[in-house]
Length: 507
Ligand code: F6P
Ligand code: MG
Image (cartoon, rainbow, N blue to C red):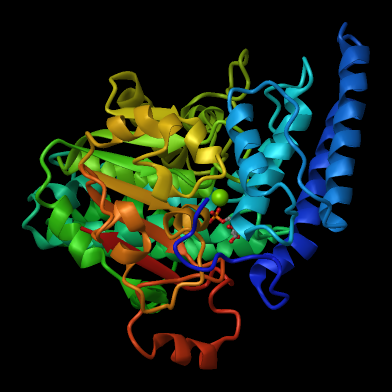
């Protein structure tokens, strides 16, 4: 808790930190209460523990109500009172660094992390709600609204379009190896898809407009399907086969798709994909670690990206890092990880002759594609190619500067050093990488990430560090001279709107 620059804080009334503390977090807290209220009201009368659960739920609501009061009145932080394994660490930090601090005085990063940890406290103090995720329903609803884009991708990844070899669009793209244009183009697309999957997180959307979410996602996916069509023809796939499958899911003309992709690429204000590609294409059966951000559609596209790395032979091990507690509303927990895979291939009705599924595309080819994909991904998990793990460090108050040296993160750091590449997804991970400071926007990324970068304090054994981040906080680094001024003229809120992005690499 010793930032290298002035940290962002809610004290600055013009900052997004202030707006977050003032307006966004109280809404998030209220929605948490609503969720618990709804859940306990729908408990079945047949549940023998109903009474106890109700009482505990009331207690949770009271505690979270108290939290909202403290936040809105900028009350001093108080120590945590539950018995989770991270309590000591949190209370040490609270006592050492913030004995007289409060929500608006502290760094925004600390206050916000503390809020989610306090929400967890309310559940952790109970017996029956200990593992309850008050954000799960929101994650589920928004994932459901992503059906169009999810299905479109699944078809490209699994449906055979080459009559002879029965290869899918993706397999055709990667079949000629790292030096081929198709493999390279596919990589650049996958990176964009994985990046923009971060644009629709739930904490930014007080009232998610599901139609808008769907529109944004389908646009991104249609960008990929245009290129898949060209990959299919360049691979001499049977025209009949590609007509049958791809036209059924195509959305718009190729020209529109290309423009859409270009339009999105223009919004990446600093783009190190080329540098990342030079590393990735040199990997053979490597290990890639993805520090996940959000569940739902973003997790799905992270799977798509990881699948590409495996099919192309770049990685034989992908380690996904999830959060142990409900975090920043939409973040992935290990449960979400498995749940997402299950929704693709397992029926939601256990005993029925005509099974129903979470997604219900009317075209049987599409339903088949989802199931095939889900089974393929599940097999990666079963045979250890994909691993999901979680560590307390990711939900601590510490920035990632502390990963190499913090005593409680040593096991994590030693394990991660075995990796060839670390990919950090999303806005909060970016903020933690750069310590959420007021860096000049031209600061090199490798400098801003301190020990994980290339500067003097560089830690030993850190591989290439990459961030795919859509900008949702008032910090950004790695921009060329003049970009900030130019952006200020284009859109006053460009740093926080989620419309712009950076892909940053530290070699
Ligand atoms: O509220 C803080 C914040 O980091 C925002 O900047 C961002 O909107 C959100 O939380 C989380 O974004 P992400 O899911 O991309 O980390
Ligand atoms: Mg998130």
